[in-house]
Image (cartoon, rainbow, N blue to C red):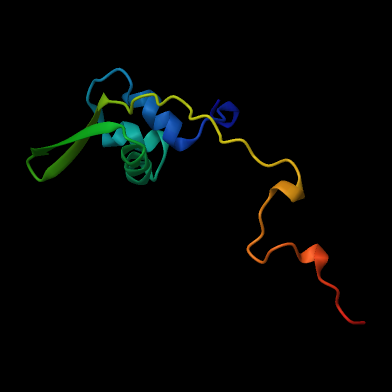
Length: 102
């Protein structure tokens, strides 16, 4: 049932393209009506997606194929964060030492 599928349109398109075979634009629109936007997002993420256009008389048929995925990047270790306000330098010096008139 369609309502039970909680994957995003982008994930559905990616799953459809995974086998590496040419997939028609018609099949892609079954996953997401904005399939071209989802394919653009996947390309921005680094997936290599080829497209092909065939003409059959007056009709034009589009096809897509996944040929490569972005490399898995190792997570960079985060730099240690200061734990107290005293260890964090201020642009204005130590404001605690200032006495303000009432």
